[in-house]
Image (cartoon, rainbow, N blue to C red; front, top):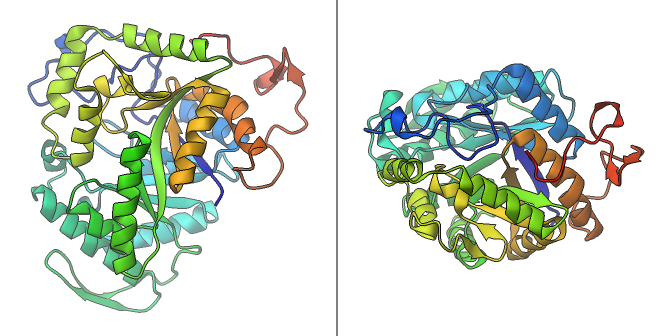
Length: 401
């Protein structure tokens, strides 16, 4: 089982800080309580193309594109980026409750033809009723997962190439069809930590995604989903969503983490924790429990730092350390059964290079990556580092700013 490396497209904006640019503007959180943010990069198509091209050059297999009020639409954005990349796949996040499953199946089929087979799907059921209601979705948490179950059954049925009928609580389909099914069928990535989510993953997911919890907790999740899948007569693969801060030395990496933490004032953290604490997502509550809103003891497991989760929803932990240390942690998760690593870092362009030039060679040397030429083979080194930047100039300086 090889490691599959994926990166992230920040379609809500990027920058040199952990402070979320948009997510705490509702729910009674006033923008004047948020620390002013400088150095923000708008998610325009030119900047996103830089990240996508860098990810492709550095050997990442795919990029995850998020969904939500504060992001650009993932389908449209990534469809545009397929035209400026050649091999990179796009892990498109979408909410099943706000689109017809037959239309989603048709969109996926069209996308596969346009991109020549580079679509992966990340199904986001939604753990925040406030966010769901913006899209006209008023179902409660558990019923959303029941609807997702039906949605995915319809999608897979429609991909069969024959008229498909379905009668469920949420969907009634007569003769659903994609005249030209996608080839290949997109892999379905799915996450959820609640009792309602587990059976849906077991019945429908190709890859179950967890956020970056300590290894012992991740093992519990793997065992849980694997057991449920076995009862369904299925095999599910596993992935993990993490941030990374990887540097030439451990000292440099932790200095960068400390700098990111130093950007956060007390009011900013309090506002974020107040907003995130209202989430119905069991996974989000597990993320919050890792740090309890405190800046103390944020290294919750060797090289696993929970500082991101002080202000960011969703994935709230980062692998921090030297390239070898980060590779050690990836190898540890891989030994538990994790195959897909969906990674990110602030800013996403620079951190892609730090990881791709630093950690990826470590993983390759350990035999964890599929055999094949390095994306940087034949590129001359400059100052001891691969000359990935245009013109052979080193892209980064120590400190990562």
